Each structure stands twice: as structure tokens, then as C-alpha cells.
Length: 483
Image 1 (cartoon, helix red, strand yellow):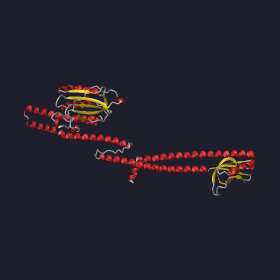
Image 2: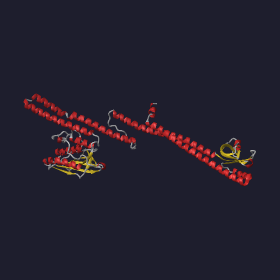
Image 3: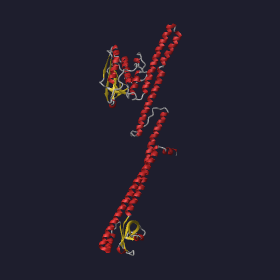
Image 4: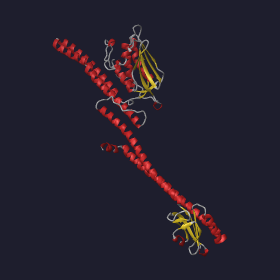
């Protein structure tokens, strides 16, 4: 009973009832309209037929008198059609015709009016079989009375047929509507129950649950695809929050412990002002490093929480890369290397200018620290291309590259490979690049060259409606993140 009550409260049930009612009313109206108009048309045909018969018989009577009229009626009465004839004398005795019995008032009211009567046909019906007809009665000279009519049997049978069709049609409509309602309701309820079950699973903490997509591309599939994309985003944000918490708990424990130990040693062993000053300077340096780590983590979190597209604008990448290259070219030359750029003029993309600048800065910093070749000078190349509906930016060095098994791992927070632990840094630079790439609908991808390593991100090209310059002046933002 509870299941039935729940079923009847659904929108599908209510809509089905509405559709059944509307379709039934419209079908009934259509059939009644057809039936009434058909009946009216057939009645007009009966009247025209009776009037035509009367006109012909009147002409016969005028030309040949009663004798010719009797012969004509007798001849026509022998045809088994729907026409009716009766000629009586002044005493009411039947002279000729094909009517065996009819109400006497019909002949008495010989006013030429059209009336519906019941009658028995001569020679074809038993005494208890009555038919219906439309007749006209006229009085002729000499007291003769002439009745001409048309049997309504065909019209009545057609009306009954339409009536039966109407009733059958309404029954079929209701039955088919009920079957359709059951099918649709069961299908809709099944999909909704599946969504509800998945939602309960997610609410219980299992963020990996997803709504099923059956592949019909109906409204439920489109809803499921959008909700699954939303759940992917929520799971990513929750996982990022968990990662940040774990990183803070594990990776910041060591510097905080070192800070505490140095303070305790200073309090226990430092002598004089110089000793305390040295301890305070070391403590301040360690605090600055912790603040840089926290700022980097907060910036990554802010980038990951941004809505894609909310901070994008058409940007001239050729000009942006040239500015970053101009900023870092002296530093690269001081390290004994050189920097090259290879971008087509006017290369544009929808992106966040400040974040893309930061990405280039971080990747160049990584190449400076970890991309030196074993022999020869360092070469850093900044390239950009538009292909496959995306715009790619690539930073390539000529160093040793990253082993393929570690290329995904180095993108995570605080991850630093063994060979790079002697270099200063926090292990958050590539995490920021990865977050910016995801914000732009892409990812950070590494590829080992021969020699060197290329790091690539993809951006969305500027559409025809947004082909305008916007906020393209200004330099890079902020200080580079340490990698």
C-alpha cells in the first residue's frame, strides 16, 4: 500500500492522468464532431433524394395523370433500394407502393412537411420489424395522397458504427495510456531510485559513487553526466583538502620540530647577546621558509577552488612569453646558458594572464635548477602552437629529464626526487602548475626529449566572438614559486 501511495504521488503518474484526460476529451470531441457532421450530411442527402423523387413523380402526374403515376410508382417500388412510395385514394386505401404499415396520422397530415416515421416495408419485413424513414406527404387532386420517403437504415447503421468506434476508441485510449503510464513510470522511477541510491551512498562518505549513464542521451543521461562532472569536481576538491591536511601534518612536522629544537638549544646553551642573536636569526629564517610554504599551499588551494572560465580573458601569448623571456634571459645567461622562444605572432588564448605567467616562471625556475646538461651550456626553449582546437605552451630544457615512473609523482605536493633534495625549494612549484593547468581544462604533461625534458600545458583558443584584446598590458605577477 505504501509503494502504491508513493507511486501515485509521482509527477509521472500525475502527468499521465492529465495526458489521459486531455487525449480522451480531444478524441471524444473529434469523433462526436465527425459523427454529427456525417449525420447532418446524410440527412441533407436524404432530403435532396426525397425532393428529387417528388419532383419526378409530380411531373409524371401532370403529364399522364393517376394512371401513369401508379405505373411509375409500381415500377420503382420493385427495386430493392432505400426509396419509399405510397399512393392512396380519398378513402385511405393503398393503390400502389412498397409500404405495408405506418401511422395513419402521417397520411392525414398531408402538408408536404418532412418528418421521421416508423414503418414496415412491404414484402421484406415481418409484422414486428419496424424501420425508420424520412418522408413527405402531399394531397393530389381527386383526394389522392402521395407519400415519398427514404429509408434511414444505412444512416442509422453508420451512426451506430461511429458510436461503437467512439466507445472502442476511448477504451483503447485509456488502456494504451495506462500501459504507457506503467512503462514510463516504471522506467522513470527506476532511474530516480538509482539516483537516490547513489546519492545516499555519496552522503555516507563514498565520494567515488557516480550516477549511471545508460547511453540513450535522454534527459536523465544528460542530468547524470552533469552531476557526475560536478561530483568529480567535488571529489577533486575534497581530495585536495585531504592532501593539504596530510601534507601539513607530515611535511611541515620536520621544520616545526627543527624550529622548536633550535629554540630549546638556544635557551639552554646560547651565551651572550651574539649567541641569542644567531639563534633568533636562524629561527626567523626557518619561520620565513614556513610562511612561504603556507602561502604556496594557500595559493594552490585558491586556484583549485576557482570556477573554470570565471577568471579567463583573451590574452596575447606571444607578448606574454616575450615578457617572461626578457625577464629571465639575463639570469639564464649568468648561468652560462641561453633562452629561445618560438611562437607565431598573434597567438592568443582564453586564460588567466597572471596564472600563466606564474606557470612559465615556475617551469623556467625548474629548468634552471634541474635542467642543466652534463656537458655544455643550458638551453631553455619556450614554444607555443595551436593544434587540435587547443593552444599549447611548452618549456623545454636539455638536461637529464625525469624518469617516466616519477613524472606523475613529481606533480604532487612536497614531492622532491632524491637527486634534487640538495637544491633549495619546497616541492610545491609543479603542484601549482598542475592546478593552473586543470583550471584551464588541461593538465601538466612531461615528455623526455633527447636530450632534455619538455613540460606542456594546453589552453583554450580565443573564439571569434571574443577576438579582442583584454588586459594584455602589465608584467608577471608575484614572485616565482620555489620548486
